[in-house]
Image 1 (cartoon, rainbow, N blue to C red):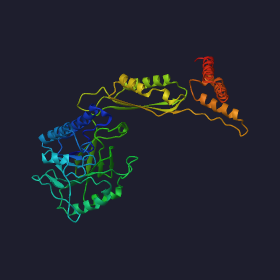
Image 2 (spheres, rainbow, N blue to C red):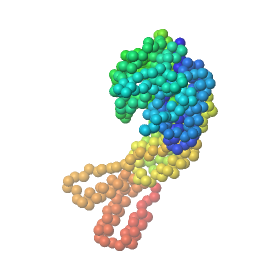
Image 3 (cartoon, rainbow, N blue to C red):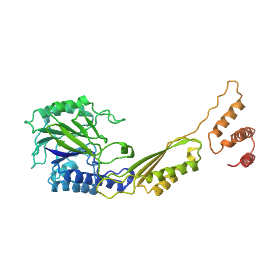
Image 4 (cartoon, rainbow, N blue to C red):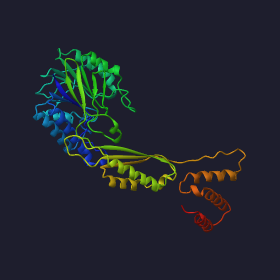
Length: 427
């Protein structure tokens, strides 16, 4: 019974948030996943369905991470079969890629179909000496087919791939194909996804297991399309996605693909405060501190064989309505305070609340002074710091406007404002 591990979207060299520790997370997740489920699971082979790297141009340390992970599989005599994704395919104008380099060194088998002079897709068997080919028949009874990153031309490429597959010699009992592209309906705001019907020619050509990558969320369709999601979350939004790696058994009864997630992943917490419009800036800050403190007491432990991390990634979103000017809340200072208090590796504070607004209904017969007075009253009522003095302050603003129109000097105006503020009762 053939057994293999299917991974995708590893993104070694991830550098968002400008955190060296976060970059290291992606290496640790990849290493732990293959050590636990490929070597520990005694698989026959490993599939890497695209986006092994975050960037097309990579740093030496990132290349070293890839080599370390692939070497432990090579030492265990587990073949690694790979295709390029949109992140790590060869740069425009370049004749080679880093995956081709790894293939040349014998650390992986890069499966890519060729194109004839007439533009037709051709599948050649893997040539170990030349380190190239589009498919390979493994001793465990599985044919594995590769593909390229086709982007927007994927709908036109699929029928050509299917036709080329049909011309190949009779396959072993099982046929697996790697394809880096997304299926529509799996996540929102994703344009260019394939429709299910556009993938069907591959099934009709004999593909039993279509190993996808590209979308960072796990999904399966009709017991033949499988997407494990990214090995690690690329941002806080993706922390809500179910994702992992597939440990797959190919049996005479069908496909048994189990999503595995018990490997190193850094904890990510998303918190939210909903302001009601009556809180002061001090009260908002106090609530933020309390919410973060409570969350830190329930931080999930890091999964996998590596030591647990006491530094999660935290996001706190402040939404709703606030009864003060948005600029009155020092977001940078609060973010730094919360980061230090929580010991978070990365702390993201998103202040998305909008100011409270009032709009008093006025009749068409209202005079200009009435309209001005109501406008001032609405502005004052929306500010939690002056709500108890609304009538007096709004009248004072009307008087100030009249004094300005009458041409009083700046000294007289400042004296009036000072007297107005002194007359306002303190909270």
